[in-house]
Image (cartoon, rainbow, N blue to C red; front, side, top):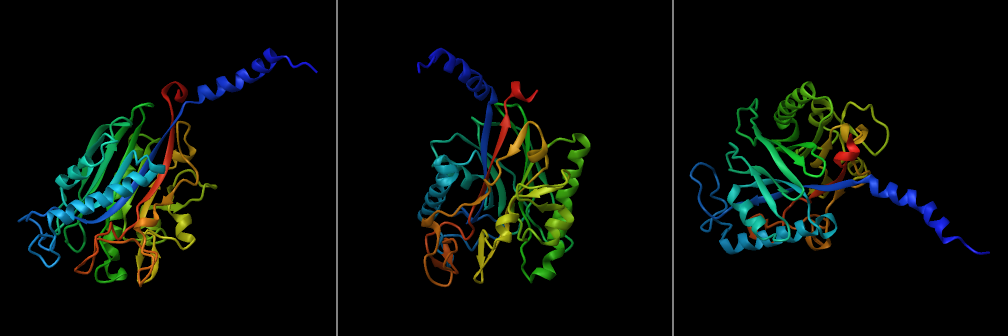
Length: 344
């Protein structure tokens, strides 16, 4: 039988046109607690003496350079070797260490977002984004006043504009108070921090019902703790049904399966999380790529034996220099947006 090639082309043409008109653009977001990323200079306003050349840790510029090289190796591994489009960071001392970090990543045109926090140890949160993917709209440091009156990290609220779609994305970078003194005793501090964050989120809803919000960081609580599920109201989410109004915790499924971003006393804890607004699931113009949330664990950063087997290799074990990466694994997820002419 003779096949009419012109007819085949005409039949395929609508499919080709449809694929071309889809114009879906994706971006990858990650979060990483970088474990004491200090410079080697003494800051008289903070307690950074533990990380100085003359300290017991002997924190020298050579060791800082090695840590930066190690961190870059992991960052470049993210997103299937392409690196993240947005990376949130915790436990960074200042903007200078962030500058030294991005200087080592020549394949990406990263821009730094940072504000100094009142934390006594001088550690802040920060964010970098690729200026070819996003442009910045605004930055706000949200202060948290704890019931215990201990200074803590500000919440960094950054609004980025996705260049191809013109859509705004709100990023909230968090490093909530630790469990020092015990989980029960310190719980009040994390609940208060969650309340402060929730208040900011509620103000967004009053201004605009459909907001793209990505909340990420080291929460020092797990997805089923009071601060996350109760105060913040972030719910279990596994690409299934939801009420369409609650925040959705992308980390919950892996947490329920016993996985985690931090190994403590032989048990994995999912304290590094990514939480999103329902618009990323139920909205028309943006979306979470279902199942893309991951704990980023390249083999080269994992302990293969010993009491911390399966955990991330840190820079120090106590005061002993190991020359590793961080005691936390990064987490990441992929998102997609429709371009301007398709989003109308």
